[in-house]
Image (cartoon, rainbow, N blue to C red; front, side, top):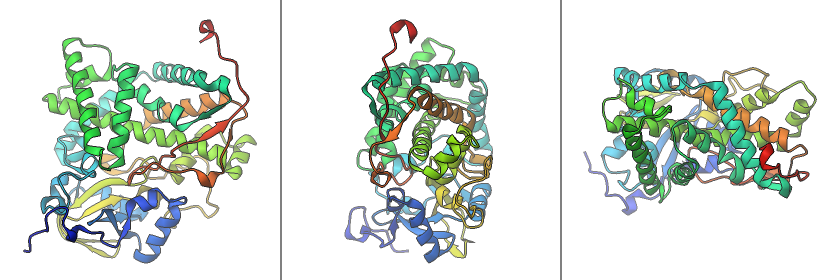
Length: 418
């Protein structure tokens, strides 16, 4: 077998394939996925970074096959041929999202079930009424900072901050710690040059929190993970917290932002919402169909040669879950482009053994954030054309860089009324 060229040499130049970031960063990402589907079918060859190819699984049926068959498609990145053979550089910005970790994301079978149990148990112990009150109070505090101004950026000043501070509170971190985590996570999800540094900072903050809670237990999820019998050492404690916070923050930010963008920018949907036929929950579901929090999710790795979507998949190939594209599959896409109210057959939370364990708290945070800002700031309007909204660079998520809005200024509440 011919040895792979060393990372950084000319052989790692672009493959000529469509970069995955070209879809997530496009004004209309669904058009990019539709062009890929027209050229390749339901499974398309794309580029993750220059010289690193992967399969993007875009068919709804193919996605279910990929996510449900652990015996053929592994979540363990140690099976990734291009990583083993040096095609992916050890310094690659992809690795914080795609490299193997000793956690629930990188495990299959019984090991996955063992590591999954603490997450399911942690979510089940959340007091939803208490959590809703805490999130609402947090939203009120954030809105109070800009309500009297009559303008705001609902991404930078709101959607980006709400989930991290809400999650930080569940895990026993204060506001300052939440903001530190947020800066590190934005770098991590970008999968760019600062991704590995962001990942290191993120883990250092959480490791300090774990060690503090070991010395001084509290009524929070960090202590619950430390006490869980299925987590056997500090590394497993850390990685369980890493999974819950990293997966929950960026995705909920995207869900809040896209729901607000839908209400602000789509007159067809907004008119139906304001006409009374649809409510906030319908808007949340529509956002999950059209702009799922993870547009693309890494990854599965073929354990043997196989076929998917009419293409030969080689052992060790990387397959990306094209969630936004699968939601747009003509097999299931509604003809009028607007989802039937209550239809939750989307794949926004993935499927199979690795389906998102935190759907309930994610919806609680998102719904509370959207409802609170609509209630507190009546008359919201976007101050730029919808087509001028840009997107944070990432192959995985599609988060607006900003949602600048204006509204009638509201008086700042007195301290007694806060």
